[in-house]
Image 1 (cartoon, helix red, strand yellow):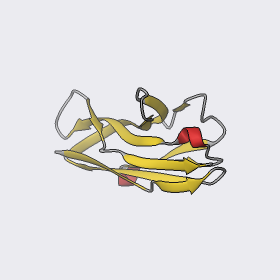
Image 2 (cartoon, one colour):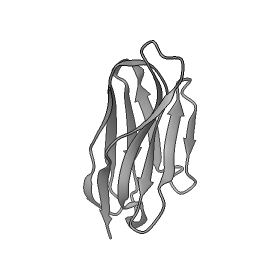
Image 3 (cartoon, rainbow, N blue to C red):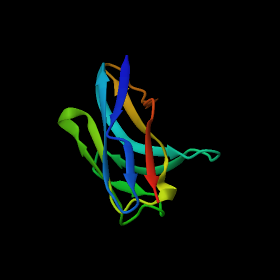
Image 4 (cartoon, rainbow, N blue to C red):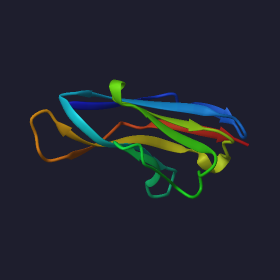
Length: 121
């Protein structure tokens, strides 16, 4: 019913930039939150950044000042601008959203399939 489709990942050298996009589609009534998590090899999935419907944003301490999250509500799309990338940013990045299906009163949480980001030193 709902799909989150990520794009924009890839390979970049340390110090470079990438911009991730995630578009939600399907029977969507209202989106409360969209954000990004990441999971590096051998590590737990962790929050990178998230933004609520009132444009309030939260960032992991490790990315503050380097990453910027933004939303285009009309397109049900969230972006993650990643600057000054470091090798330790290498991970699979997952889009995440809390949203209401049309006609529903309970929010549900959805995940994208993930997109790899590799930062070479």
